[in-house]
Amino acid sequence: MDEIRLTIPDDEGFHDVAHLVVAGLGARLDLTVEAIEDLQVALDGLLGGHSTGANVTLLLRRDARALEAEVGPFSPALLESELAQEDGVGLQRVLATVADEFDVLDRDGSRWVRIRKHLDDAAASTH
Image 1 (cartoon, helix red, strand yellow):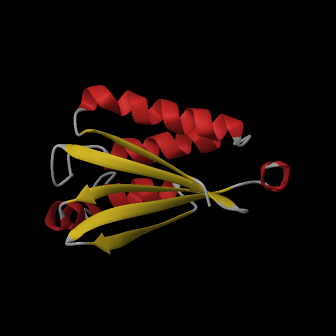
Image 2 (image 1 turned 45 degrees about the vertical axis):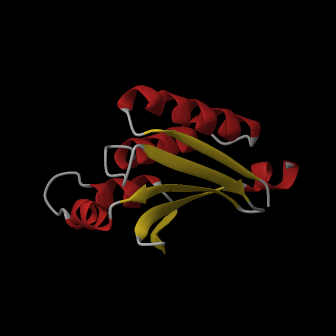
């Protein structure tokens, strides 16, 4: 499976770069505008300053049925706190709304979030 890896400073000024990469790959895979926007909303929720350092990494992969994005590393305590927020529109609610699937991965003491957006049958069969 091919992978795109983008590492950017954990600074709001660089979030647009992640959006452009997701939009470009989504367009190439014939994702709908709505699906691309869903992935960008998920990124906005995740790129809000929860990382463990000066950089945040976005990994994008495509398999036969889905586009998968992994974002991290995040501070375990901060991410768990954000996901546990029940009032208002917290991260858990955003991800559950815009992603077809998401889960939290543990890598070397930090957390990563994996988001999957299913490809429709036309997009899956043409690539």
